Image (tube, rainbow, N blue to C red; front, side):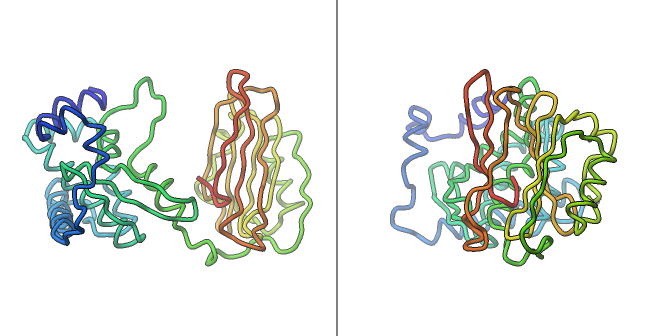
Length: 312
């Protein structure tokens, strides 16, 4: 069962007739133009119900609260197995409906988001303003995708992945991050890449990074990338270092902070023109405006993607 099938078989029958006839319009119309506080109160009540309901599903797991760590705990539960169990008990729809309310309430309470109400209520989204700009977070879609396997394994992304990329990372307090590299640093390209040679490179040019961290790829996993080269850039006014380069099948990047590995990204791309990561903006002037622009090509079409300097 893919996401579209799950939606049409299990959720669409519960929509008002008008919404079923024109989903695009239903998702665009404000269901609370008068700012009735009852809508927010109802969402808060749904969210509290969800916390207790998930505790009943897996009592051994740490209970959910309204914090980022709870999203990661919930994400580990989600998938086709849980979906089928909920379907067999007739609980799938209330689980997702209340889950959307809980996740939205978390973003509103902790990260300053704002509800944008729709009819039916689970189609509501959260508007979030962050360092990455403004976004309308379609939380109902996030839940459906988390309960269905990705087609052909492409675009695999868990609820935690989406939350990290669109909520946690953009709202991170980067000013509180410790400075790792002080002063200007000219960093040469590492032309021959192996795990042991990377360590030698860091000792020679970035001795402040004494530890790659627990979650940096193992020597075997790193060497399996078969990097052709590695470039290094200091970003965030010395708060992080980005290692990036062309590997088998694409362009890879790793973000390193005071505790080592902070995140990674892999973009499938052509080998020519040579992909590169460009740092734009001066973080010493404004920490929130600096970006990393990835230049690459796919099927001979030049593309670029901009990322926050502290990672995806």
